Image 1 (tube, rainbow, N blue to C red):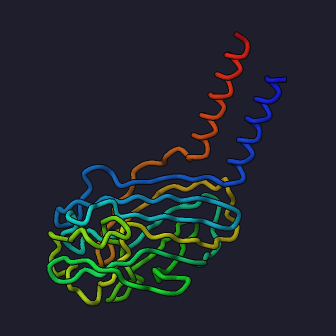
Image 2: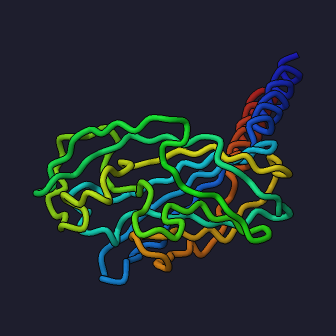
Length: 235
């Protein structure tokens, strides 16, 4: 009876993970820089579902590490294997910060269901979530720092960030999107992820690899634990 119970638990874990879809995480390579040689560091966590893609896009730099607009996260592109249909932004949210002259932060309020204002487009199976959209004034770009921390100063920020009216407010730390993309499934493969930085097009940093989906990793851990429990029961 104990063996049957353990097996049922393992099957339940498998079904629960499958229902949640696949989650993959991409990060910029170590040592990546913008054209001025300043460090850039970003992460994208993408979760696939039926007709839906959730994205958490983060600028991993701390507030003191933010020196100029060249380090702002402004775009994300990725390839969805076997999916070519046009998509749309269902919603986007973030915590927003104003950075005054001298680097003093303060909370900013942005309302609406699409707070970031980035555009989603595709060329075949390659999709771009674009905070620039070909305009002189970008939508809300993502600055480093911890979301909700309005006490740590952006002490190294130059005037391209600090006190720059057209660029303020910024999404602080992380911004989240839900995208509607017909034809997407939980098992759709995501590859060729490229981060873009600064407030001008063309400053791109590819991830250079495809990570293992988190759901598969969890499944492997679950099955390993199941096997260990069964061996202990036999002994």
